[in-house]
Amino acid sequence: MTPADPNVSVLEALRTTRSMRRLKPDPIPDDVLHAILDAAIRAPSGSNQQTWSFIVVTDDDLKRKLQEIYFDCARRYFAAAPRTVSDGSGEEIMSRVRASARHPAEHLHEAPVLVLCCIRGQRSFSLGASIYPAVQNLMVAARAFGIGSTLTTFHLGREQDVKDLLGIPDDVHTAALIPLGYPEGRWGEAKRLPVEQVVFHDRFGQHLWRD
Ligand SMILES: Cc1cc2nc3c(=O)[nH]c(=O)nc-3n(C[C@H](O)[C@H](O)[C@H](O)COP(=O)(O)O)c2cc1C
Image (cartoon, helix red, strand yellow):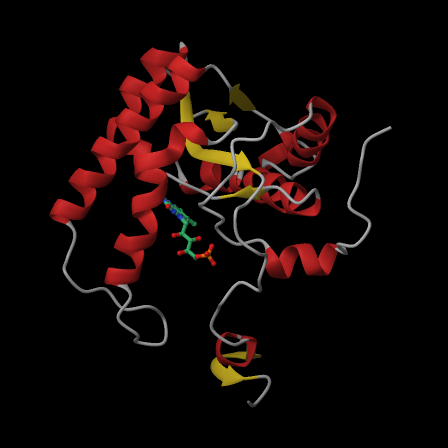
């Protein structure tokens, strides 16, 4: 029988699925991993084509090589990035983004499992829309089992190196690299702009709810 975390409702899992970057090296049981990936593949995709694939990486040498690529991409990204970036509320967030990105860049390989979420087809907005629902399903299902994750994409800076390393065909793209593991920290609600601010009624800019 698949183990489950009966204390986490769907809504609680959705509200508390956020980046958990500090992970313990403890292994994830195979049946739990299976349940998480089985939840991922329940996601929608354009015309139900399901051209996705998920590479579960647990080999120490491969994880280390992925970390080296990821580290290099993150370093180059931040070297070229603007010094300041604002979020939707106008708050300056670049120093926080830099700080939080640092841990996975240095410790990615320490996660017990890395999942590379892939999709075959021509790069387009709708191709992305056919893999990211599965990515989110994966992360929310992981949360339900008490397993932390982070949606990462820095590796795209050297995607061909990742594809060469894992034998990924030319027409298959790597949409997300997700470390999975039991988190060091505690679960908390994902911090977001308030729903009142981003939901409109009948007309763009016309708020449905007031604060
Ligand atoms: C398209 C996309 C790409 C992302 N790439 C990375 C990444 O490469 N590395 C990383 O540490 N986090 C990455 N993130 C995670 C975001 O930084 C994170 O979801 C956001 O800051 C909100 O923080 P929270 O998940 O802790 O609430 C990415 C998220 C998305 C949606």
